[in-house]
Length: 449
Image (cartoon, one colour):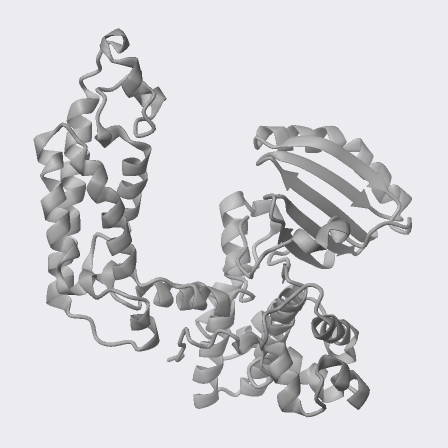
């Protein structure tokens, strides 16, 4: 069983846990190490790295340069190929490991991808494991916060049965579990009281049943919009669109609708266990699955143990590389977790600035067309600028022929392509779509697709 705690906030930048960093420090010259820190010893270097990452940090830039120039890391190859090699080594074993099925599903053909799959695969790529664990919430604390938001809403309801939930919610909030709920329970996991969790989940079920039954009942009683006081329709509590069809009540608030959805994810004892969110992260994350598989494999007598372990270590090192690049460049940098016969290798880098503009660099190395870079800027929620960079005349012509299809596909996804440009990759221009505005860019490890 893999032992994971969430208090290892900076594990990804320690050489004993991040193999990519260990490799860089091993090959760095004394002069390069001196540039990383005012001191020359390893402790000083690490103290420098443990400070808050900054785009303008000299030590971060130095280490990032060393990372990208390191010969071992440069010759690692692409992640998709490593996954295929790992699958091949597992197949040749008499008793294939459970990870085989997970890897097959992870490396899905790009033709079969949809928006939901892309988001899940990027999130569970392994690159964000430590940050997701760091940000994991105690489900009991989540429920506490949800109930605190719901209580004043039901209290405003004109329906007695709904309004009476105010006291019921207060009783739940004063229960031993919710009263003492904090995220510290994730750092010092203890056995949950199953009986109390059962009582708590029943309390959640009562809230859901009351809300949903009354919504259904009121839903069948539309009222004439002309009879409603206009001041009530202008109330922020009520969705104006719903007000045109339903009796006005806090029950039809947008917030109540959102809360009902959240309560459904916390309506059973198992869902309220302290470590539930951590368990879900570990169960779905590629890096954690690799670590668990390695632990199991080391204890086994598999005749193909050495080959499988070699490929697991290689894949883990590649993930470590993208974790470290993300940290040092103050962005989200990750590999493309899918299979495409034309793709040799590729990666994505995403950033977000303070004005809610999202920047994305997609770097592809295509087998028949060479390098292709796409630089995207998303702003005002759905306005998109795209720059397509290539030195291959055939590829550029192919892109031009399909611009209309690209525009139609974007518009069909409610995205407005404001500008699409095709340029030579060798033209002098910023190395990324956001190079000129790095001071305002602010993003951590989490990714939203």
